[in-house]
Length: 229
Image (cartoon, rainbow, N blue to C red; front, side, top):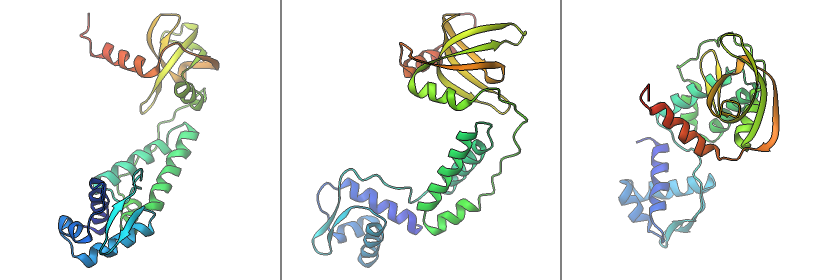
């Protein structure tokens, strides 16, 4: 077991005990020496974990403590790095910058050995497809978060143009296209809109009358229906 795994196990063990527990009981539970247990307690306290108590009296973890990412498995690190690198190469510049910042924040709180694993990840993301976005995807994401309507001009695959007012509740990212999933007021149904076919996007400061979680659930149900039903 790595040191990082041991520290995480110690935190989890303390969380299971609502009352002070002796150092020897913790050491026995974790299968480590009492000396190692005392060192690990000091390490966690130094990293900001609110562990109260002392040798001979027992230890307790104050409630409400949110565990920082002290430990990730190899595959979890690979998933974090790969996902962040993929997002960082998307045309949504604000989301791209956020991915890079998030990865830097995670790296800052990792122990040295895991930080090295993160930096040395060999899973690479290829160059992004040549995509030209005509709209600011940040406005779409903000409308989804705030449950606000959007208005825009849309040109379908056949070239027909129309004006739409929609209730956006999801944004799909694919290799070459982005797709807004929304309830369309014109069609009175769920519709998918490719962002490269959207023009003159205008946020409307009007909350749509339904919750996005409910619409997302209903939309997913339509995907599960047999064709032709």
